[in-house]
Amino acid sequence: GPADMSPETWEKVKNHPCYSEEAHHHYARMHVAVAPACNIQCNYCNRKYDCANESRPGVVSEKLTPEQAAKKVIAVASTIPQMTVLGIAGPGDPLANPEKTFKTFELISKTAPDIKLCLSTNGLTLPDHVDTIESFNVDHVTITINMVDPDVGAKIYPWIYFNNKRYKGREAAQILSERQLQGLEMLTSRGILTKINSVMIPGINDEHLLEVNRAVKSRGAFLHNIMPLISAPEHGTVFGLNGQRGPTAQELKALQDNCEEGQMNMMRHCRQCRADAVGLLGEDRSAEFTTESVMAMD
Ligand code: CLF
Ligand code: SF4
Image (cartoon, rainbow, N blue to C red; front, side, top):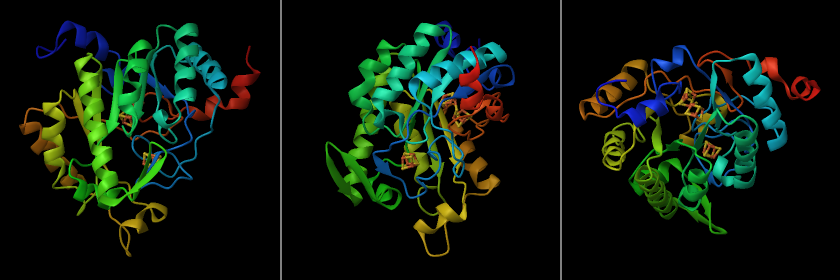
């Protein structure tokens, strides 16, 4: 593997299409949409669609039970031998649906023990689940971190629901940020590779993301994936009357380049997949594996 990586780390990334730029040409991932609920509100989210933290907003994924998901994984693995990673990334937050998420992992670790398990979360309840994540040998976790400053966070998150209580504004963002960074530290101290996703929102957090980059690097994040806000009419109006634009390709690249100068590994091949994506990154074979067709298989 690359000179700057330990053999243990290389073992974990060499066939993960998101963690290794090289691997994404040869290895596929699949997502199962088992996690409908969410515990926070992002201003760029439209709850009718997939979680925009990882996934392409504006597409509706077919929701599955853990049992249906396990069956689908077997069906896909027997059709696509390059399928190495099973991720849970929505359509809501996987850790706001812990029973469904961990039941799915449990079933798959029994029926398909060679498949690597991957998880993407907004991080709010992450510290409560690190032990369980570790016990299922999940060695790839993504946390979406869009800010480390509650004043910036108040513009992105109108509310969170935490310990049976709704928090708003700056207080909500403060709690979310503390939990995200605590979760990151807990994961990296146990050797679980952690990727940070950030959504770049011009005029809201674009300049601030350099500070986010330093904060996550210093806490041991393995990779930083800065994704452009995909502005769509049904998502855009919450930031302002005329909608919120996404960054240009040049703006995105300039920010990624700046972060890379700080010696952080940047992910630049993310395809912002949907919560039920199947196949190589950028390829969508989900239509081949509808619930109906998978359940009809033996
Ligand atoms: Fe899925 Fe995410 Fe795991 Fe990859 S996707 S849960 S880390 S297996 Fe990958 Fe898709 Fe980008 Fe996500 S290209 S949206 S980074
Ligand atoms: Fe929507 Fe995901 Fe944000 Fe939850 S975490 S509000 S599902 S974008």
